Image 1 (cartoon, helix red, strand yellow):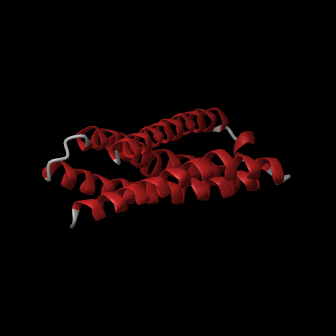
Image 2 (cartoon, helix red, strand yellow):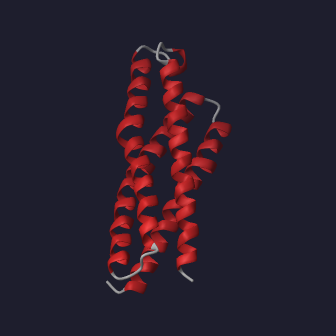
Length: 157
């Protein structure tokens, strides 16, 4: 693949991905909770959005890691740090997609089976802790993404 074309693809994918992360996490989901009267419904919609975002994040971070490896191989050592940032983002996405989100969904489903919201169930404290951990991981992933976009604009010079 021609290096400048690959760099454009890298920058485009990164910008769209990080923009999507920021839009979903800091605009769409807060708007859901402020607009919908039912917090349980807003939470279920938000959970689906975060689940989709996590799966997409796993895929895109792998693609970007492959591209960053290519750049390093063709003599662009500034992408070595990008690989580390992408690895951090991949770890966040894997943790969210395959550990925290399924665990939270399981707790929510158990509560719904009993006719309760998760806040009314015996798992409310655990769910709250998982929610806090999930939020921290999403924030970390967003910060790493912003750092990557910043570095990419620097790399374009």
